[in-house]
Image (cartoon, rainbow, N blue to C red; front, side, top):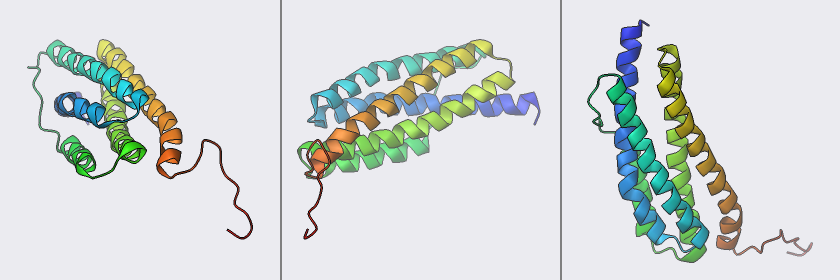
Length: 174
């Protein structure tokens, strides 16, 4: 694959990520509002600010490449966000709603982790060192958000299942 072809792919992927981040800027406040856990709500509010920074970084990278900083419709994120809206539209309450929101949010994070890992590698191969650094920062922030969601899920999922904070042992007759 020639550098020109890889650069074309790289720019295309960056534009898709920019659109994905902009979709999330609209979706995250809805997820925060629907969260009943204060920790989860705060996490979404914090990640909203990070997401705005992620979009700015992508714009900065596109401008440094001499490209207009505009997004290209990211159908993958569009589908993931639509699934998240479905969860928000269900009649779930309390920790059950929170568990569903975490599930949707982790799909988002995993999609982003995969996408940022790829574009970071493209940037490295193309010698775009500043972009490698910026994309690496974003990648680590997405991984950290996923770790925090996993941590919250360990408690919230147990609550949603009606299980106490510590594992219960079942009696032989149960």
